[in-house]
Image (cartoon, rainbow over all chains, first blue to last red):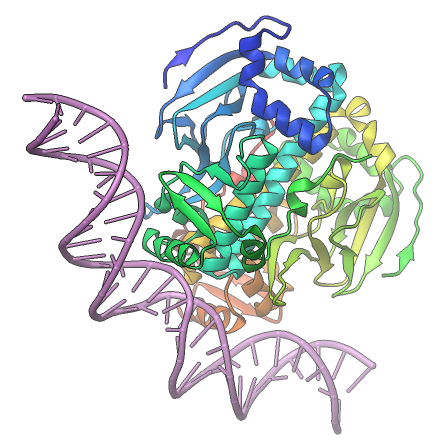
Amino acid sequence: MAMRFVDGSTGSGSATAGLCKPLTTKLQNAVGLSPPELAPLISMIQSTRQARAGDAIIRQGEKSVFLHVLASGWAARIKHLPDGSRQITAFLIPGDLCDLQLMILEEMDHDIVALTAVTLACIAEDALESLPLRAPEVAHALWRSALVDEAILRQWLTSVGRRDARSAIAHMLCELHFRMTTAGLARDDAIDLPITQAQLADATGLTGVHVNRVLQGLRGDGLITLSRRQLTIHDIARLGEIAGFDATYLRLKRKA
Amino acid sequence: MAMRFVDGSTGSGSATAGLCKPLTTKLQNAVGLSPPELAPLISMIQSTRQARAGDAIIRQGEKSVFLHVLASGWAARIKHLPDGSRQITAFLIPGDLCDLQLMILEEMDHDIVALTAVTLACIAEDALESLPLRAPEVAHALWRSALVDEAILRQWLTSVGRRDARSAIAHMLCELHFRMTTAGLARDDAIDLPITQAQLADATGLTGVHVNRVLQGLRGDGLITLSRRQLTIHDIARLGEIAGFDATYLRLKRKA
DNA sequence: CGTTCCCTTGACACCGATCAACTCTGGTGG
DNA sequence: CCACCAGAGTTGATCGGTGTCAAGGGAACG
């Protein structure tokens, strides 16, 4: 959990702007914000922070004086149970907000753990507090991002509660592909998928063994290739059909 | 889905104030707002709306010009799957907000359905938009309520994904009892629980038959009484232990 | 006083969990 | 460059928690 500080000056120093690429891409694609509108956000990045795979980014019960934005790498929201099992409650990809809720709530109700090496952009809380006045459309966009996360959560609950394993995993792969595309991180039908089958199991409420068998099935049907942390979806239409996937919940736009 | 309009004048007309009892109780208990601080909220209620059990309050894909606050009765957020099965994503009790998300997002990603006869307080959207300026602590409280709903969602996902049926149902009963208490609607260890076993099954990812058997088990162990839509918890400590229940996620307070 | 949900119970089937190797891959150090 | 090692993936055999199907009983409501 090494801390490293970079240039936090106002303006669009190229290092800072590069850090925020996935976030700005996401906000442009999904909300329709223009680069000039996004400038206030980029200029608020005060420092960056690195973490290695397995490190906790923030723990249950903690509070933070920074809003953390994932700039590179993957992370997960994790809830731990008394018996040692865990439920992954969200996968965070570049451009996702870690802890916007701490603007309003007192402490985290879950851990956030880095799944790969990770770079975080840190935005000071007090800078955020004046954001609604200084750049209302950006503040709006951040809340929108949080509300889409909640819509994702409802989809996950639906997957775990009512879809069978094959359909649930297909749905997860469709969603991740779609989100990576929105963040500008997909290469056509292929994405980096740097998570283990056990982590996929913790997200879908299954066991690692069963996830493995289901993936074999999807591979066997020629729907996907997944190896060396690279996912390629060969027949996205059919995969979406198996999943009952409808991307509307990820597209929810800003109100006119 | 009859619409009925009542006095929407400013001030604390007793009818309007009475409507909001559970909401104000909740906000007082959970956030520590005082009655004078809540006055602006009560004065914003523009009309009320009634619905009968089974009626849709708002449908997936719809938008609304009102924020609906549940004043009496129970409702549920429901996601429908292509095969006809359903996942209940939230139980809404008096004092809960139905569609705050529509302040920012364009359309609903799920249905909200009345589970009993229901009274809704309607707050006009444009009145809400100026709320952060006029009564920042109330606006804060509303967002807080939405974020607690998200924390609840994470708990549900954890229940469905990683707890067994007995533990998941015990957890649900603990949560509902706690929330009813916070809304000022509990009588010691007893609450109204006007939902069917099938609905409890749709919320926990189980079948009605299995929910029935689990409830029999909890009854047989002397932990609860549940009949005629009345739930009494006889041994809340042991029920909480079975559930792995920790109410922190429902208590998340306003930031100092 | 019948109709309609809802609850209850039993027998049986099955999806996914568990247990237990074994293999493969990537990274590390000699 | 190779030997080693830990983590991740793979596979088979078996178990068990829930689902499914089917039927009957009870309570609310007109």
